[in-house]
Amino acid sequence: MITAVTRETGKSTLAELISRAAYGRPAGAAGWTEDQAEMRKVLVAILLEGQSSICFDNLPYGCKVDGDEIAKLLTQEIFEGRILGGNSTIRAPANVLVTVTGNQLSATGDMNSRLLPIRMNANMENPARRKFARPHIEDWVDENRPDIVCAVNTIFRAWIDHGRGVFELAKPSRFVEWDDAVRAPLMWLGQSDVIQAFDSNTEEDPYRELWSALYESWFEEYGSAEISCKELIDRHIGFSVRNALDQLDDVGDAIMDMFDGDRMPTAKHLGFKLRRQKGAVVGEYQLISAKTSGTKSKRSAKWRICSVAQTPSSELPARAGR
Image 1 (spheres, one colour):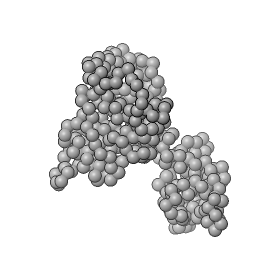
Image 2 (cartoon, helix red, strand yellow):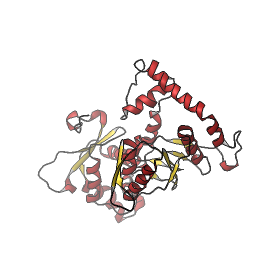
Image 3 (cartoon, helix red, strand yellow):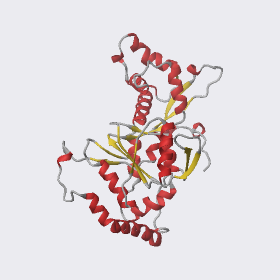
């Protein structure tokens, strides 16, 4: 994910240079869509063309990059979908490099750990006016591609012969093959841990920020005490609605932000969001569903926010086996 604070910083050029260096040709252009059925058709068409790399260029400003189909393509060895304009289903190898570019992009949800962020900043108002020592950088990459490829392969070959078995990662990521092929060799050479870039995705995830604000304000107001969705709405939203929304306190503000101003939240709406977030840890806090009996009303179900360090092990969600 190549993003910048302003246009004309060189995002598209960088995406092209990466593809030229790795594959000897520019990346195939693709159109971004948030319609997942359409995205599946786009990806199938790209794979049928045999592209080595594709670039979704110039996503809308501030786009929250997410999508089930892209997530599948980035993590599965085989991608399956229907051919555009027909009913035939194809299965194709998903060995393709995916790049997305745009200004002020943020990876959200599962894309946090799938998109390596590259954040560019020209430190000037009009980046297009810059002068470069190599104005035709594409030609330079083409001419020097043998040296670039040789250097990359030398790193990996040295890792296999001398580093593997000697250097070990303190904390493996969720993608162990990537750890062994990219992350560990670079750290063995003394470079910084690439996983930190993915951590920045999580920290800047706008949805995480929403939940973090709710968790923190909730805990500050109630500690680990149990409270129902109806009580939360009545205390923090209902009073202000009868007067003025600008009187919302921190908890009320956080609840309203969860719904992005689309509608006035009710206890039912809030309960639906909390049930989907049940057991989730954000920062130092965790959302816990209190054990209640004698009521069938989901509005009356009790919830609490606990400090992760203080959450009893008996209340932690069971972990699935690997």
